[in-house]
Length: 141
Image 1 (cartoon, one colour):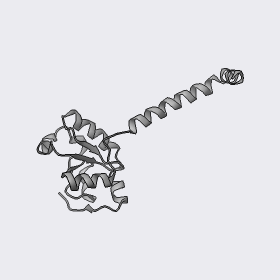
Image 2 (spheres, helix red, strand yellow):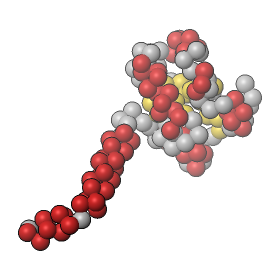
Image 3 (cartoon, one colour):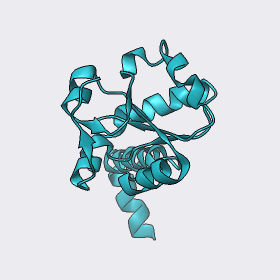
Image 4 (cartoon, helix red, strand yellow):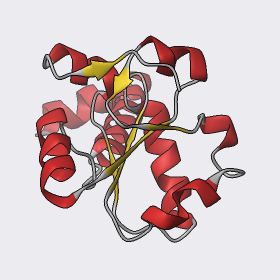
């Protein structure tokens, strides 16, 4: 134990850097532990069993290139202005999707602040959906 304390005292910079890295790692793990996130298969179950609504927050061009069937496109930068489109779905589960799951996570927080309780982030986004070979529609809306 004395050797450890001596080593730590002689290498304060290294131990300080280690402490910062551990704090950042813990913060990242806590932030990524979104309990409301669903995998593509979990999203499929919500859609089939509970008539969940899929909200795609990608830009219109990305949405038209391929999206989950029957998804509603509300780009993330317009979400606050277009919440009225979702009002009729307030009592249903809402699955929010983007390209990779990061932008939709922020949109989920925005929806929860607006009073939507059953909001789920699609873990991995459309990329995960497509990698699981789930169907996408290329119809323009």
